[in-house]
Image (cartoon, rainbow, N blue to C red; front, top):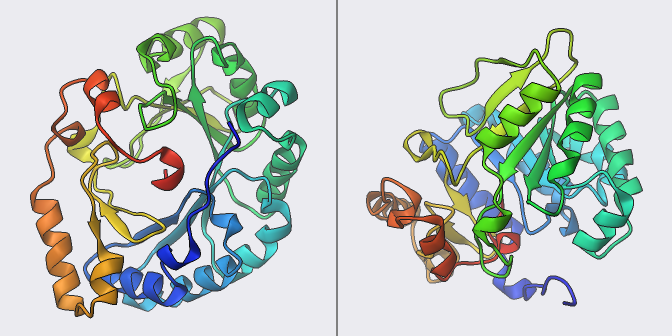
Amino acid sequence: ADGVSLTDARRLLSAEELLRLAALFVRAGVDKIRLTGGEPTVRPDLAAVVGALDGLRPLGLRQIAMTTNGVALSRLLPSLHAAGLDKLNLSLDTLQRGRFLELTRRDALPKVLRAVDAALALGYTPLKLNCVVMRGVNEHEVDAFAALARARPIDVRFIEFMPFDDNDWSDSKLVPSAELLAALSQRQPGLRRLRTDAHDVARTYSWPGAEGSVSFISSMTEPFCGGCNRLRLTADGSLKVCLFGGSEISLRDAMREGASDAQLLSLVSSALGRKHARHAGLASPHDIARTKNRPMTTIGG
């Protein structure tokens, strides 16, 4: 009830460890890196980390992205932009100030909306807004988010509510993407599917003449595991090959115990070899909810 517990700094990857692993992955063929969470903007050396990642472009890195809650973003964004940040996602589940306070325990919606303005002014378009839709909480705001996407170069990404430790998941709160799309299409006709990358987790739609778009991420009802090419490295150095699986391997510990780059790559390869075809081998959202996993705040989205 008191918010998110902070991780002991000694357990977190140092900047040097993070960059060693980033270079290792880029040399192995990874060409996009996203900084996520918990919340990346709490890291005091964030701009320096982005700048160091920018130095990996000659090795094949094409894109540096970040997902943030946006609360501290306005003051940090100029330095992040100068350091080489290419793409930006903001997590925003409501446009109502009172509900924002209820969901996040802070009265910071005006700061987030200022961050949206600052990002658009710096050319982060389309700016992606990640909105987790929960029945009885914010599903009635879908039209307001859609209006934002029609008026500004923003891609609002409606995400199905997914089960993680400590998020009180229930299938009664799950709003299937198909239901959202059908209702939105009826209320705001003219939605057309846009072509996106084969590995994109979202299905994207827009209206003729609209500035932006809406996307649907159907992790629960229409899994896209077959096209998923993502690896997650947590802030404390654990590798997850599937968002929903509790299985992890600590690359931090391996590095601190003296592992060579070749040994680290071998650990990654072994983890990938054990990856299940779908949802970490779990049959249903209820099975995922019953499986011990981290809270999303310590995984990174």
